[in-house]
Image 1 (cartoon, rainbow over the protein chains, first blue to last red):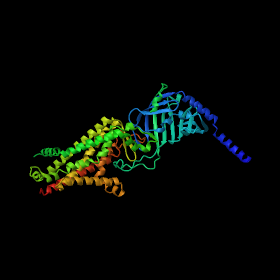
Image 2: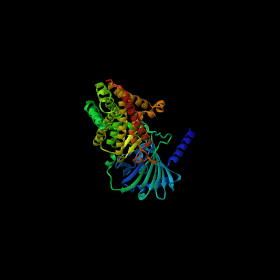
Image 3: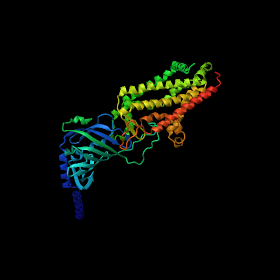
Image 4: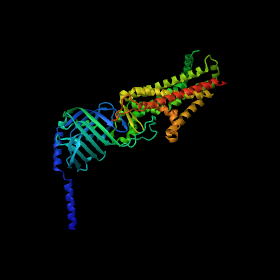
Length: 230
Length: 295
């Protein structure tokens, strides 16, 4: 019996060691968060390009609203665009504002020519919509260059960021977000399409991509919470 | 007697009949009913098309439900049935005269039989154009007044196209022109069938039956018909008006303003419809010139 208890104790000890946060990772995350915390809210005008295999859409002019810690809204200025629900994950505070998590350093990797530290984050609370996140952090500038966020309900989002004039507060100039899509298919005969000879592209990955090119930021002017209740 | 005098008389005859205005009344009624239905249950209608994507995307239902979208929906629903309304008039052109006992008298007038058929065809074509203008007034102008304007979203079986509203109006004009081409072809078929009959009911029913048969063959989507009959069936090419709402995109997935997906397919469809119209009209002239008029 003692033997089994000893083995169980060892396993639990090893598991707790494995899950314990890496202090260097936690410190790096807190440094990055300090930078992102400079922004309480912003309004940004941006161009949004949707690249999904079954959608043909023009470039949209959108307004992005953000309010600390995790409220984000993308609204079309005019026209129509299909905005992925996961766009909320372009806000890095979604991950950085987590309080109950484990973080591990997982080596380094080049992102757009910048050597980044890879930090894996595992939320511990069951209530979090994020199940796992990987941040590729530029340790010199304390910027997240890439993130891969897995969610409970809407799959995995891979986000790449480029920075410009607002890098001092962690706001990107360009965001590329890749996400999983479901096949679009209506029952035959529903739309009685005109057959112009176009064949549907088969075997292509069901991945969608959204590119947001920010044109202008207005920071910390105060945004009402009601704006995000739409 | 000049050709235009004959045409004027034929137009007078067409617009003197009450049945001519049944079509205008029916179209106005159907369009108003569709607009009312979409005003009340438009959200459900759009969610039917976007159901599979509601987990992934925020569906801009309010934006999609605009005048342009409603107009395309109206055209999609009623253009399939308009051949019946065209046949009601064109099928009566010769057979109606035979039935009324005026065909023999008409043949004694100083006008060639070819001119008479061409005048009747031209009168039918003008009727078709007026019908489409009426449809455009209610479906496009009416829908824009009721639902406002925005970008147009076109749902296909396997993809969806978003067209900027600045790139839409010319597409509607082109689509109405193409629909006119298709319906004029139906008119020429009806006139051809009308030449053989002494009672207008026969050519009207025959025209409708032919359209129904070819539409069913097309909807069956069976390879044996898709490879043999459907590529040459006029019902396949009559749907060409929809082709003006299919756009091309760049490698980044962005629609190209002013573009049409496979424009040569539309040219081919247009030429096939013109070919059918010409063939039916020439056949009608040929048969009528040799026709022994006994009624």
